[in-house]
Length: 51
Image (cartoon, rainbow, N blue to C red):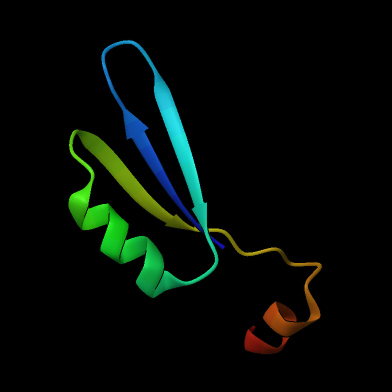
């Protein structure tokens, strides 16, 4: 899962995406102070194979 976090003067908003490509496309369009983060769940067997 990918998360975009956007900080403004009055609020913080978070948006979740299934794919990196989808998140990066939206990330380029969002204005303001923003962060793109990949969330990895270690209880996900697919993720455990990567480690």
